[in-house]
Length: 578
Image 1 (cartoon, rainbow, N blue to C red):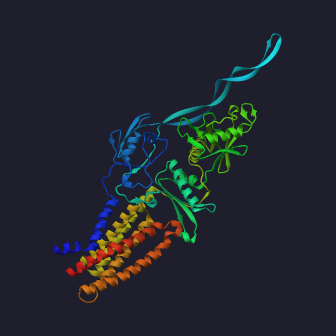
Image 2 (image 1 turned 180 degrees about the vertical axis):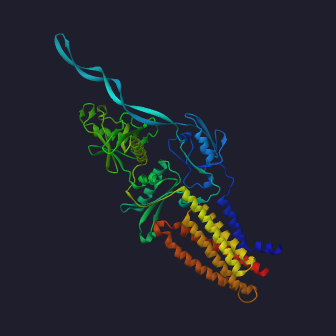
Image 3 (image 1 turned 135 degrees about the vertical axis):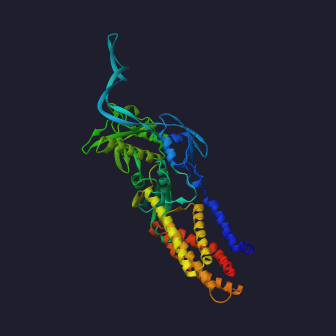
């Protein structure tokens, strides 16, 4: 017992214990953490209206808001959550209890709109100002009078079917049990590497990163990582890329949002009257004022079917005035002005809208946007129209990107494959540890010498994971490979310490210091070589190998400055005992 107390008083061992305790706070393990964690909240959804906020960008996994009950029924996992969500009825008030409080929201109905090949006649009264000639004292006098006329219009018959309850707008995952973040390789999703189509400044790249984050968040996607990467250090002026990683999203969901500039313009006679972003103060995304246009039936085209979407927007006063200035000199032809308002997306005309005659010269802030969708079947055309509508709504809210982006590479990993990668990574780590144990037992034939090496190696893995949790680094397959490499390097260094300690004469204090000094000279040389070799990998592959380089450098640094000195003290303690 006295010898153990002596070991625990060694300053090197005290430093190791201190960092191990600190690591527990960083990882914050809690295997009994129940419920489901909120990953994202769709804008204008029932959850958003009720006041549930999406998690902040840098929040730790264990600090995320968790749903613990729905309508007073306990939610322990994803299965419980979806079972309770499926039982919700239309217009039902739902009580959602979370780790942050209690929310009440109303479930919205989910309807299917079908446009039938039938029409109905709608009559409406329209009052017009006309000239009328009357006889006054034998003289014909012409004056303007208001007359009411009845007009009819043939419109398609729209059939609405209640399909159920619309999702409440929450993207959830199993409640995390630690603060260790899993990267895309381990949880599935889409990774896109983008390159600006033209030379840009660092400020423009930062603006693109911010714009993409806003665009993807508005679209309602889950965990999003948008970072600036390069294939060379700044002083070498390499190519700059933008890496987008979205967990739980498919390739099709992401491709159009990140690959196109999304420049929206509306023009009258080639004069721009408003653009997406600052000129648009509100975009309707609810069923009441957006969706398939019931006034224009889906119709057959040469290649299949075509449908039309519509949604309302509110313009800023400046944009409304520009539209008024552009229309005040236009002539009236029938019920409309002589020029339409044309809608352009990324330089291509997507639609044009006729302007009612009574809007000439008026600064109108409330207008309606329309656009097409096409498909081989009527249903496919309707789906395409709704997809185009959602994308245009997003672009009108966030504005266009400063420059066009080109896709250099795109990877899509399924969640199932991510789980297999994680299982394989644990299996590889276990096999590696068993192999190390076997080699050490064969080499030293003493468990007392092999055991400290194993414990030290496990401590290094634990500290690397703690540091990754502390700085918010996502662990992917490359990072796990870096951890395995760092552990292998650590085992090699510890063997160097043992071999030096076992050489030569009795272990006097002088001899021990000289031997440890020689061992650490070898260790520091190997450490410097590893760091120098890993530094270029921070930029290789446009940053795709950054996880491997960072975890390797982090692992060997923790080993050299924390665990190796502690191992030297433990090794001396074991050898002195023997």
